[in-house]
Length: 104
Image (cartoon, rainbow, N blue to C red):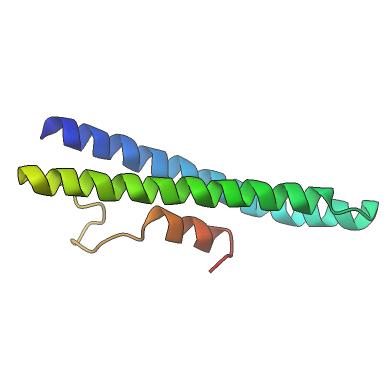
């Protein structure tokens, strides 16, 4: 069971890093659009969109890893950490990243 908790902690730390990257990426969106407007190009926005898609895919994979970890825990009857204080489930990584990036 300790191995599962170690895996879960590592996954939760990784999620924090993904969320931080999403915040940084969201801040860069305005810059990319501004540069494209001045240069009459779309390459900055296109690159931004590709990075955004990659980050959402990474968040989806993290969500799937959580699901797999949860199944593994249920199989051995282990309880994983409650990620949010009062026992309320936290949003999955994909939902959080989409929200940060303004994708809904």
